Length: 223
Image 1: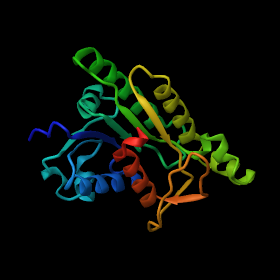
Image 2 (image 1 turned 60 degrees about the horizontal axis):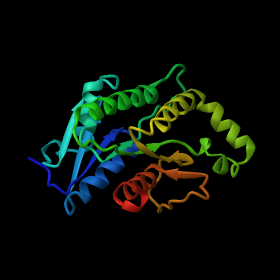
Image 3 (image 1 turned 135 degrees about the vertical axis):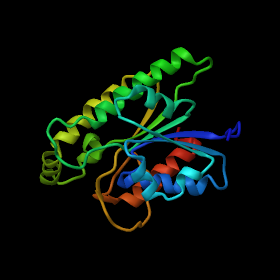
Image 4 (image 1 turned 90 degrees about the vertical axis):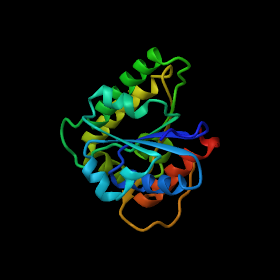
């Protein structure tokens, strides 16, 4: 099925993670009443189909499966997308982890190809899951020991994040980017979210973060 001409095309990475699955569910609900086209990258489509049963039958959803280093798969995922959402990440402190670097490198390589190949190509806006640990203003609001403890406990994923987002931020000819920098993420029920550049809570639930991401993606004033 061809998407409506005015449809907003959103490419999503990290759709089976704790935050990503919330975003997908919100966007699927929104797509019932507004023109949205979702292009979802996964490493394991079976996991996505388990989390969101029937998603593969939705006419406004395309699913792409492959390795995060497969530039052709990534290129198919982001082709035509005005918005790219990435909630990729590693929750375990694994030495040498590079999930985010692999993702950033593949997205950049794919965008370079699309820019060269597509007439009238326009650069997308990326909403990228980062961390308040890398926001000096937000980090200053934490007790110093808590800040040290968080950085130490997740030192390897944070190193991956720092390198990945630096690559994306410097790629201004290919994309614009908004870093979403939440505090500690917790598994609790939604209590409501606030989008701010001035302050941050000590913790936020995955459900509230997913709702905030959805608002950012759908509201033009954030792009």
